Length: 221
Image (spheres, rainbow, N blue to C red):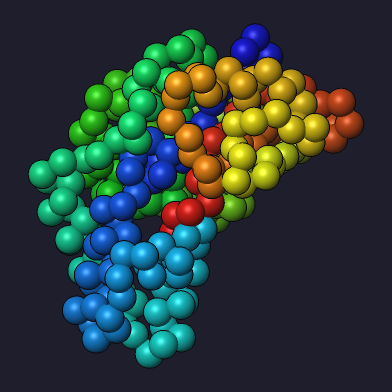
């Protein structure tokens, strides 16, 4: 890990179990007259940015703002009872000694009601960032650049490289410094089958050494 200066984490599906979010979306849509199961919510909204999910609702004549508000209300009720972590994530994170940040498309309020309440929060300190902090949400690089600047790892000309989404932490010839990705998965640790790892570099595309590792999950809206 000596070449990595910072690690950026997505939140839902990487640090927190995203099942409550899907359940809340399914319940809110069903209440709005569009019956949906949790499995259907997973299939429809996985990988969507927030505006994509709203566009999907609007295209079906649904009142997206009202549904999102109801979904958030239901989700926050669940968080008031329990904020579920991805199994094993605390143990995995205990091995990192570099600066870390959370970069999430979730709202500031949702982050306050969820990850800020968990045992992971002290590991990130103030470095928990929402798409509301920047002009463009992910997959644009704005949020990653914003976080890196505050971690003291400014980037120019960011390079994004992506592993196969079904094998997030395995070796890949497409990624430099493969040992970095092996280090993030212990032999008996949890699998995140559809997560992805991306590296960003301030050097050229050829022979670049990653300075910042971003870990995110394609499955979540």
